Length: 525
Image (cartoon, rainbow, N blue to C red; front, top):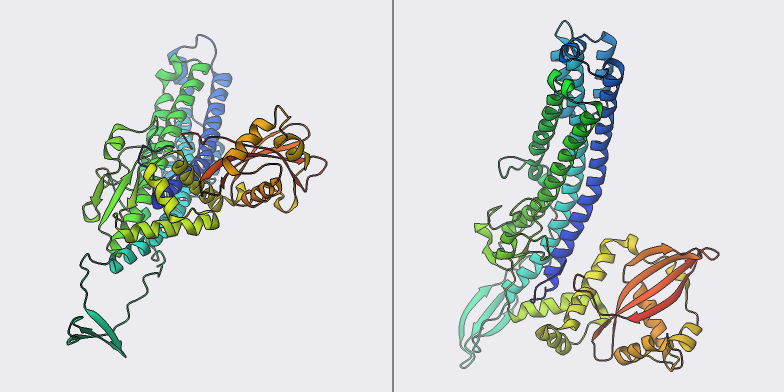
């Protein structure tokens, strides 16, 4: 993910991080869905192999194929089909399959060809049931995440709207007396009016997502239907395509290998449709939840932020950073998703008033704490738009990433080991040809050297707790981890530092520092 020249503000970064979390969770759910499709594919392929290897032979004629596939299955085989349908947990899917089986059972006899076709229908519906279940879990989480985010942004929107001061420097003098406010002329002191006091509900209040909101949203229709109807449409089409393979003509003209390949192709289409649907729908539910929250709060405008990379569509590039009225929002036109696989996100538009800038600074300071540069330095970085401003934005994303994914925490934080020689004989030793080139940059950028290396150690210790870590490899001696942190120098400038760690096999409860060096942030971070 990367931005254009205009850097993202705090809230845009939060929304983009949510979009990344949504897509990451969608990937996890897709793994489960693909496994269900793969299981169905393997089952059906095995059934086809049985037919070919039990009944067919080289140069078999179409008439002979028709005779074999027109033969009737035994009642015991029908029982097997019913048992196969029992694995389906979704009620609607189970009912659809049972209705299909009952229609077959009403016939006096069932042919082997009909048996293969109903097996195709059952496994397609079974995969669809898993797809539906995973979609519901994902979209429920996404809506809860979007509502919380919209609430936090809405509080700041209310504050900026309600307490924004006008440009006129001449203001009436206000006096508060018990339950009324008296307005006096500031020059004469004469009473102009009195206003009864009525305390407003606190603007910092966050409301919970309404009961049954998720249920209603999941049943909402857009672009011709709701997400569950699109799942069943896709799986029914898959079943129809599979059933078309099990005809006398196709079975006569294709070898076993060709038939298995065609089944594989059809299931790959099913997997692609499942991927396209879940990634598009997750964007819809995120956008819809925010839009509904904005309407309830009276938010007037929103802005679209596109994720700009090689996969970004022309429509998303053209609409990036544009501002729209909440009342005019139309899905597919000016509210995401704008197309299948859309990743553009809607962000509350807060304007550019001084109050908003103040809140933007304060919100970032709440996240960065004492690392937050002074307002003067912050504004200087923001106006320059240089690499250090980019570093600040990257710092925010990294810390938010760990908050959302605590499983990325560096292990054994309570038992960190920093070998003294790593600093005194390597990093900050001028005669060390390998270590000093790294140490020299650290000294120039951050001010640490041989005399105060313990301060550098303490800075790394502190940073180790607030940034995500990535497991790299087991080198035979232990497990290696890499951690990208941001350290701030005396001028409040963020410097990107890469830190290496190892958990030794013979000392698994501790984690040892191995290396560190300054490195420019990659453009796609």
